[in-house]
Image (cartoon, rainbow, N blue to C red; front, side, top):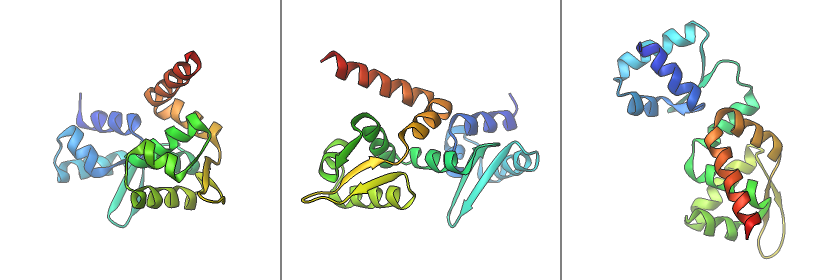
Length: 164
């Protein structure tokens, strides 16, 4: 299989993947990977999202909303938060912290980013705010299209909860 196809396959299976992750997965060196990424971009096969210090790669044709969800699914803590809220519908920051097993500050930073990106809703409550997904159906659709193993995992967890 030629390198262009290998790289394209990795991007299609991991939308929103960072350039460095592709280097790690494919074991292709920086300069060589840059050449093939540029070739794929010029050929209209992939789209790049460049921000300071981070380049993310997406399959061609992905919408901005889908790309935003995919980007957050590549960040482990945010991915866990999204998955937890898909199962539970709404939760406090304490419940989320207990689930993701991270410090309160890490959870707070990630919740704030997801809220700022309009992935989450925040309901102000005392003693702790409640969070829910802004558009769970859209997130489920993105997961089933771009992360099918994640949606299978969620379905299995839901079935287990119903069996209890």
